[in-house]
Length: 123
Picture (cartoon, rainbow, N blue to C red):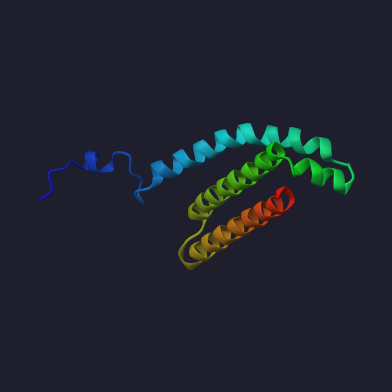
């Protein structure tokens, strides 16, 4: 016999037992992107229209490479979580599972590609 009330079992838990953690991860990544996107724009912007070698030299420095890598990593993880919520809200059954797997694979592949490109430039 369980001596927990219904309220005690439900506190902090969504229907899938992870709603609160998912909400906090979205909130934290949103705040991180509020800081990272302007930093990325101000570090990437001066290189627009410059010769290729000059841009490579610029992004081989630590600060622009770290800002770009963090923006890519946090941005694609935020995209993955947001798209997953969207898919869960508007689809069902096998379509839901296939779309969620596709979005997760797409976001990880795009993040890995971007981070690999930055690593090639920076190292």
